[in-house]
Length: 384
Length: 149
Image (tube, rainbow over all chains, first blue to last red):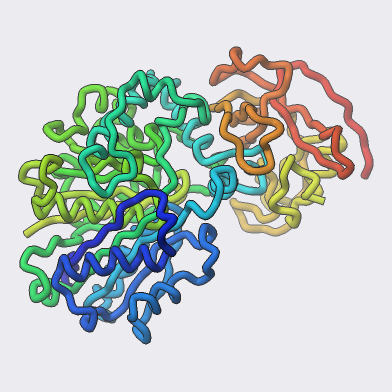
């Protein structure tokens, strides 16, 4: 069966984009991806849009984007799995190419979140838990991850300092990424002095809502070699789920869907955790990155706190993670995030990341979580 | 009737709506499958073990232990007037888990993972409509049970 390659990539600046509609954001990313790959729009067979519809006033987003990209009457569809919607778009594009239905597919992850207030977003996101038995008590998205953090601290002795060190790392790299929302370094002291959100998490443990769009153009192997002189191959995919309700998760120190998805992706690509040269993981909260180190097998269960303390996830460490700033510093336009992670990994494997470049990166991975691990997608990329 | 349950209700219609009336009467109910006897909390109409669709409510003791907790300072819409509040997840003595606010018999600073608690049915006093919930309290905390059915 054909391999699937990435032949073009584009990425808007993430942040408060009061200057643009969501389809205008999508176009920015699309235009950049076409130019990056020197791809003519006529070769694109279909588009897949990753986004979460509730944030937009415009209903049925795929249609308005397809029109604005001038891709009618070619097919389009939307994928939605909360914050993993972008990776679901990549997965369905990959599937449609592998099935032989399409040869070249544009994947666009996009979200415009700042039309809503923070309280509205907290209420919306809290409802990613079980609305019948949990949201009635005012649960929030940070509240759920906070409960994972409490449990992780209790079982493994993880500290608030270690949580803050994740934010310090991701701001360090975000300061060096011109697409990022936050481009300033921070200190542990500054992180810990920020306002409480849900104990033990405070403002600097949480990523920020943002607007943005990212585009990847995927192609079947023969077309990919025609369209690009340095395609990056999507060689491993994993996807798994876990219960919607936190009440039905026996283990509250990790995300079982992430461990399952990672194993699938490793098996498909024939690699192991130790082979991953660079990773983008879903650090919606600092504890989420610590759990990701463990779920992906970068360190043993319970050792995620020590892993960041030892700087093992910095460039030069055993597993560089989120060297683009992660969700924490880039911002988290939820539908765009999974595609943004892939964008960074493609650039790393091409060797285009300048001072943030991981030397000799051959294999990279994205770990994109929907909700509190109800969904997890792990995608594994490799260069020739 | 299920819109009685919780400060803000997102889910008024369910096959286990009777849960809210029992809670108003001071009873915390799980479900027991009438075919295989599987007990579940939260209650569910459709048995996860054998997929049978007939169930009976079964009263839970409400005794449990804290699995995890968090104090929420940044409130979602609809909860601003009770913020900050502390929620906990507890393992119930019989089976299942429950999420609720900590009540006034437990100081926030005394909350520990693994500590025993008692789930106590509560009625919101300051609303015209019937609104019920439950809180996590010190073991031994009492409450009144009634029987309206």
